[in-house]
Image 1 (spheres, one colour):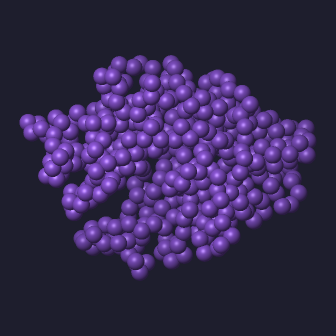
Image 2 (cartoon, rainbow, N blue to C red):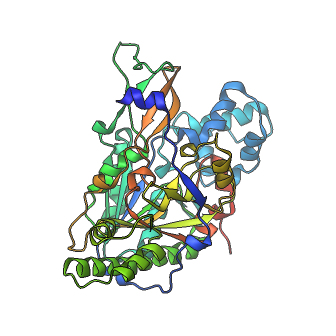
Image 3 (cartoon, rainbow, N blue to C red):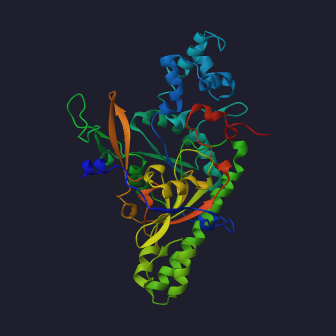
Length: 452
């Protein structure tokens, strides 16, 4: 079956419009009611930060001083890890004025004792404070302390096995100093690895003759998410952190998303109880499903259909203004018998269809991966999240291995096809809550610098 998927390529999703303010929900109040339930912050953490330093690796290979490289060098003192480079260069002194000196600086950062190219993003020093620096782990902890249960701040990271020792070495002292803190981690499960093929759609063979299976993308983390013991799960990428001098918008928006989710979940559970006890008003339920959950059926709503669509996991997703960042966005999707809200990637949209391209180009909002998930049913029992994924929304991407090109099969994305059959609310959040670090020079952006 995998071979057939490669031949077909990434399936297209039938987007009918980009989400506008009309489809967004507006939180009416912020309360701490969500704190009565167990909450966990789930942080998908990538492998080595190699891609973050891709341009600098290229510089070491070709020694061409691009604008990107010179911007990095010119602003070197602004990076939180500047002092680490100084230590790595010792006893030599920093020399930014010569070509050879600049090469030594970049080598000191990526190779040798510092070896930042091997580090996971979670352990890169990103923010500078008066007399110390902070990694994404530090910032995710601090952020969690502001809106999770202050007596039980619970974070779960997904990491790679190669970084386990480094992760534990960093986290264990933090846990000893902070009794209110609980940090757990997991690896992407090996059984979620997928077949890779060559460019002719034949199984990719390693030099030793074995067939190559590779990690199946962030959608594979649905299994890790499914293992989390919690009522409410906050999801945020490891590299989306901001300097603490600018944290207010992030904290407020997190509380807004959680508050709206609690309020909506209470209504959903109430309607389910009404349906089960035959004391329901189907017109009222239909209005709620249309106006709040933004699901529009093409045929009349029945009691059975209402139960099926209400009794699902709920996600409240923050969306930011689309400023041209690479990534997915919120769309209204036609599923055949109904339309609903989905987060779709550009690769899931048929770029050969002018109408779909226009919808994509006119999208006002962007997905920053800012979700609050409610994963228990009306009886307080955990949903099996694997039952709500759409396995037909997989991705085919092109990679390389052993210097050869290949095609990789990725599971439906964690917030794309893996949550296709969830109930969804979209809420606009301030652009200041979105501060991803995709390349090292992103750390020069305002969100990563101290503001007085």
